[in-house]
Every structure is written in C-alpha cells, then in structure tokens.
Image (cartoon, rainbow, N blue to C red; front, side, top):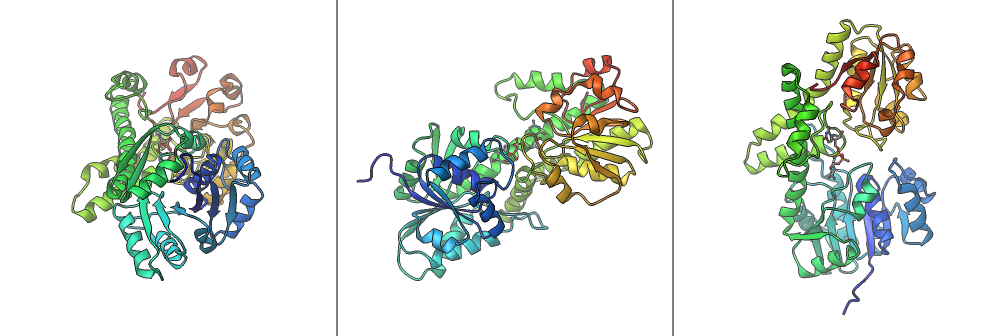
Length: 439
Ligand code: UDX
C-alpha cells in the first residue's frame, strides 16, 4: 500500500507562468520535479537559477528547491516523460485569429508522451483548454502509443494570479480535479496533500469548463463595473462609492469591482474569447459574453477620449505614463490596456515618457520604436515638464507618490488616473485637475 505522504516523480511541460510556478510549487511540496521546455535559452537561464519572468518570491523559492535537488530543468520532454509518473501539461495555448485556442503544442506534447510511454503515467492538463481537450489528448496517446502500458488523463486547472502566483499556489480557494479513475484521483490527492483547502472532484469536461467559467465570470464583474462607471460619468456620481456599497452585499462581494482602463493579461481576454468560441462550436451563441468583451475593448479608447476632451489637442503634448504592465507586480505586457493606450496616444501625436517599476524591458519589446517615446528611471523623471500624468497600472509605489513634488515639475497639472487609485478630493485640493473612470 502506498505511504500516506507519497512523493512523486513529476514532469511539468512548459516553463511559462503556469508551468514554472507549478514546477517550483511541487518541488517545494517535496516531489522530484523535472520542468521541460523546448526553449533552450529559457532552460539555460533557469538552470542558472534565474526566473524567465518577474514574479515576487519566485527567485528565492527557485534557489531553495534547486538546492534540495527537487527541481531540475530539461530540453528533452522524451527523457523527462520516461522518468516521471505524473506529467502536467502547462504549455501555451495562444489565441488564433478566430478566437479559438491554438492546441498544436498540446498535441505535440501528447505525441511525445505516446512515444515514451515506458510505465503507467497520469497525464494532467493544467493549461486553460477548451472543453473536450482531455479526451483529445487521450485519443492522440492511444493512436500513437507503441505498447499497451496503461495511462490516465486528468484535468487540474490552475487559478493562480500573476504577481501573487506563489502565494496562490500554496493557498488556493479550491483544488479542482477532473478525473476518470480512482487511481488518478488518489495520485492527485497525494500530490496536493500538504495544501489545506477544499478539493473538488469532477469529471474532466466539468473541470475544463470550471476554469473558463470562473475567468469569464470575473471578467464579467469587471466589465459590469466599467459599464456602470460610464453611467456614473454621465450622472456625475462616483463609481468608487457605488462599487464599495455594492460590494458589501455578500452575494455580490467586493473583489473585482474596481473600475479602470479594463482587464488585460494572458488569461481574461483570451479565455473570454475562447469560451465564446467553444460555446458556439457546441451550439450556443454566448452573446452575453461578447458584450463583456466589447465593453473591455472600448475601455482604453474611452480613457484616451477623456484626456483628449480635457487637453483638446494631444499633438506635441507631453504625457507621462506610469505603469505599463497589465497589472502590478508583474512585468507581463500581454494584452495590457496600458500598451494600447500608449499606442493610441502616439497616434494622436503626443510625446510620451514612460515608466514602470519592473516592466520597461518587456515594454520595449512590444512597443514600436518611435521618436515620440522615451523611458524614465522613475515617476518623478517621467513627470518632468509634462501636461498630463497618466497612471495606468496600480503599482503600490504610485499610490505612495509625492504628488506635491510631481506637480511642481509638471507643465500643466492634469492627473489622469486610469485605475482610480487617488483620492479625488485630496488631489484636487493639491491643485490637480483630476480625471478618473466613472468619477
Ligand atoms: C486571472 C485570474 O484571476 C486567475 O485566477 C487565473 O488563473 C488567471 O487569470 P491574472 O490574469 O493574473 O489572473 O490577473 P487578475 O488579478 O485576475 O487581473 C486581470 C486583469 O483584470 C488585470 O488587468 C487587472 O488590472 C484587471 N482588474 C482586476 C480590473 O480592472 N478590475 C478589478 O477589479 C480586478
């Protein structure tokens, strides 16, 4: 009989935001983990103990688990698969032009596993995938395997947030296990045994839908509050008070009711899109979710219009932008509303000075080179001689900024607060003209 605290040989495929955190997390729980990725540069960097993206606590934890020999990195999925009993698939599923997820990497991983099925394996989907992907993985492995070695498939969706990923890994609200066999359930329960939270066991299809439905619901809350903010702007009401009072109703809850320039990142925009696509493929036109997407797409443009309304002409105006990542505590620029606002402002002919606490290198990669864009070393340098200070990501350091000092260096004191982080009355008293979202 297996020991209660059995430790497993685990392979995590993919060293991105989901895979790397899971690999480090499983290693910390005492399992022997190989994290496999076909990007040689990435693997070399990780072998040197350097994370490939910014995430609080990751560097320290990586060092610790490597020191205990619980985690190693490999370019060879074939080798890693042979050495492991459990394989978590955490490769990217980027969006295709029609909104569907590109599952080519998942298929390729499934084929490599089929080629290397040397003993029983549990293959677990961790990437966000359309419902029925688990079944497809099973079909692919059955089609290409060269022997009759048994295997199981499962779905264990990941709910962690960037910037809080390590905390979320060890303190999830729930662990969802979509399984088809008692054996698979037992292995997964064993793996997570030291994490104290509710474990929900479902079939694989339900587990896959839980992930899409959860992300889409959170995105819905944000678009809903952003739509109400538009009404507040028209009515002269403050969305902050409206959302605070709404949030006190326990049935509504106060989280994800912050109005702003919209949701970004590699999950919400892509997952909402994919859910619309999956529903359609299954025969349901998810019009409701299309509107959630539409509200969000319009939000950055709406903010630029508000700035334009105030400054009238943006051509040759100097605008300082604080915050480029899609949210604080990450350098991730993917689908960041800030990037779309920067591009919009450049199109209008404004001259921009940009600052982000962690994201400047990543921003340089995604922004087109332009004589209209400069980068600053801090908020104060960015704000020098500008006609508008535009805050687009709610980093803690921006909340603590010395506004008096900032204002003394500005050409014209317009504060465009795209995340509603400042106290409108206070900043107005300091002499700023204030623009928020819905206030
Ligand atoms: C999200 C989910 O929260 C997580 O469970 C899932 O695993 C991955 O997707 P993440 O993308 O890291 O996580 O960021 P999250 O903190 O959820 O924020 C997403 C976006 O929504 C950010 O751009 C954020 O600024 C925006 N947001 C969030 C709002 O505009 N208002 C809010 O009230 C909350």
